Amino acid sequence: MSWHNTVIAVVAGDAREQEIARCAVRAGATVRAYGFPWPDEGIEGVYHAKDAADALKGADIALFPIPGITAEGALFAPKCPEKIIPTREMLAGMNKPGHIILGWGDANLKGHCEALGITLHEYEWDVDLMLLRGPAIVEGVLKVIIENTQITIHKSNICLVGQGTIGSLLTNTLLALGAHVHVAARNPVQRAAAYAAGAESLTLEQLPEYLPKMDIVIGSVPRRLLEREQLALLPKHALLVDVAAPPGTIDRDAAAELGLKTVWARGMGARAPITVGRSQWSGISRRIAGILEQKS
Image (cartoon, rainbow, N blue to C red):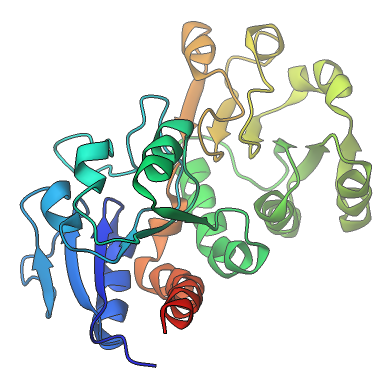
């Protein structure tokens, strides 16, 4: 299958998108890019657009980042000097029928795409891709913890709220480093798996009993579960690390008002952009191949 007549726009993101753009060029596509850190030497074969609309102009397929869209509708683009909020006018420049591959879309983006006949392909919850980039995310979270505490992970009391794919990887790693790990999850199967791994498992309702003893709390559920009432129970030295997509697990504003150190550790996959970019491309390329097969 030839990709040579396919135009791909890579819009927003971080250093991972550099590698994704290179992979797209190697596959034979014409690549237009904007909104992620641009290397001084450029990226061979990739057109550096002046803005997001320019990148999307004439594109058959657009690639947006995995990390979730903010409440105001902005794509994840931490190094871009401007917020990239997809508008109907911006997306209308794509070729018809257009396709957008991304982590997940909000209601605003979905509405624009429906009006324009653009198909969204979401892959934030694909377990295989989550596992492939999981080690880089875990390493990134360890880096955040080490840089923001004055205690070792070894022997510290850590509470993980949520035990999905990334939460379970974090549990196993933290246990291996000698931490006292407590896992709070709604799903009884996830709690049982955490118990079997060597962690203490809790229901969400049990959190108030255990939070006063915690040194570190990590949230991995993309839903607000830790509000002011629960956060006020934590000791003042506690570190809060939220690795979840918007809106996150932790009420970060309330945590700041309570004087608790909080890090919203979004985009931890950027810890190893070449490795993670290639793993993301493995999933993206499968979806593009499926789109091209339907066209042929």
